[in-house]
Length: 158
Image (cartoon, rainbow, N blue to C red; front, side):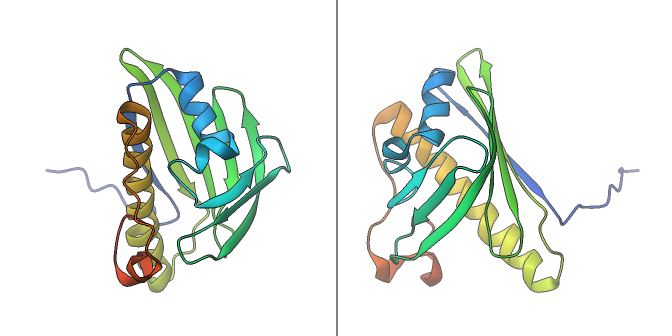
């Protein structure tokens, strides 16, 4: 009989292996110029407790959050969302580069929030982690830059 573990709707985790040195992957998450190459269209990241984590999306919306914790080459944690959600990204060396483990947590569990967080945010993070891999391994940015073809219209690459 299969183990029926109850799903925890307050969190999800996505993982990816990137063939790049750990310090380079960590810098991609903690250096504003580097983040513009794969994640936000404009913004700022200050990788220290209470530092800024602000981003501009494909529509020109400014999202302002704060860094909750950062440990060089190991982890960055920041507020992310409109209802108290948080994201923690951990980095570890692997035989072929760096493993990245991203957890979004403290998510609300209404039916609408479950859909938004587990379908919307999980899909978004999956795309952006794949984009980070594409940028660091191949120098290719997979994002779209057309605000008429953004996430609100169902396009995953914005």
